[in-house]
Length: 68
Image 1 (tube, one colour):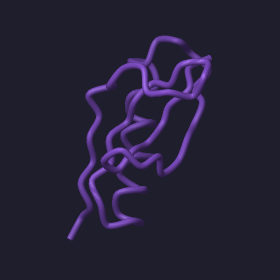
Image 2 (spheres, rainbow, N blue to C red):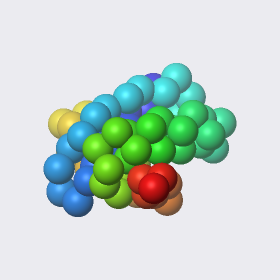
Image 3 (cartoon, helix red, strand yellow):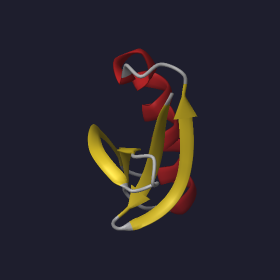
Image 4 (tube, one colour):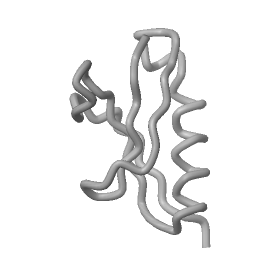
């Protein structure tokens, strides 16, 4: 299980978990969730994996900007 954090700047906006440790299998779902959050908060969102302590571990290269 991989844990994902959705951040705006340094602020944690939301979290999610994906079953597969391989993020490529879940990339579309993570990107869609990031886009929904960006539209909702009207801010840029970056998706990061989170370690067991809940800290940012690795950037997923998924960034979403709000649709205007």
